[in-house]
Image (cartoon, rainbow, N blue to C red; front, side):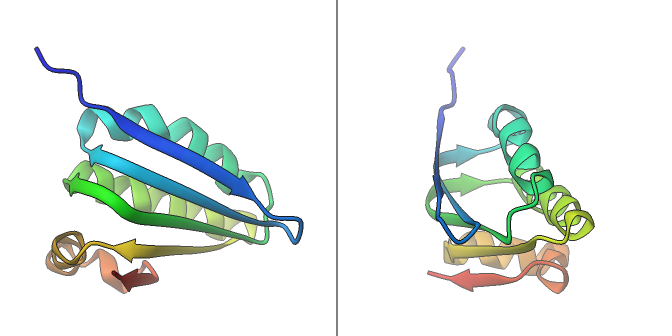
Length: 108
């Protein structure tokens, strides 16, 4: 059995913006690992939450579903949510699943 790893780094700026960098593979198992941290940041009341996905080497539908849940949590808290550095294949998956209609993303 192989353990899939994902790295999450958080930088909180003095103006209330938060930038989270994800690196590794985002799948069913790793999405469950990072979800508590991301939902806590989303609900905290920051001005904006930016997820930098430039280090993501793989993202399945569980990862995309996680982005949608975090987006909804941010919306409820009045926090602007954005994805940046989205790898082209991940952006394509988001378009196929229709997630790009709700999520603001900047493709790498």
